[in-house]
Length: 282
Image (cartoon, rainbow, N blue to C red; front, side):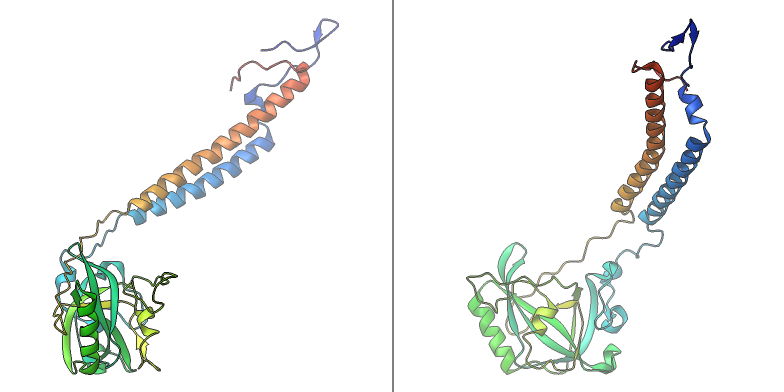
């Protein structure tokens, strides 16, 4: 240890060791606080880890079981992740005049267009009481002219009292049209965006997800909509968060050590007149 200053050959004050500083009541109290914080971080890490593994994953092939729409989602509700791509059945009628063309579609890597319409569901088969509509994509084509012609024909003779089957898909969200393009152009399959253009939409409820019909209408081609990939029972994002909380817990204890050491070094420096202390011995 660095020699203390001498007064008439006798040491003035012996500098404390790092261990002695650590054992002082103040720093013991700070250690208790650091351990409490570390404990909270460790609990949060354990909680994240517990949520990282789904102990009750959806059964394999669940989305391929044809189910009534009313059993899968309610109007206005978001579609739960395990149900994205669920095959459903719904009965109702298309609303004349509310078919729109959706651009920027790709079907098995082929660019093209969808035609989508407002489908007023039959309350007795969907478990609803108020007038309720579902956005339905009824077919695909690679030609804009064919898409416009099909939408126009369907507007004139909208199918009535039909039963549709298909996959239920989450809203893609709307994008603003390009500044130099048609302000009415739709490039995303978004029920809220379609709703804003529907002519018969006063006082209705609307489903947030949309349906891709398994049977094309209006002379269009079928929309290729394969079964969704099976979800993993492990959530890697939660595992990453759990590791982060463990690091935070260790950092809380390290901060206590760093602050204690800084206080010890400052005290030794004051007692030895600025000489560097020798390496700490706990």
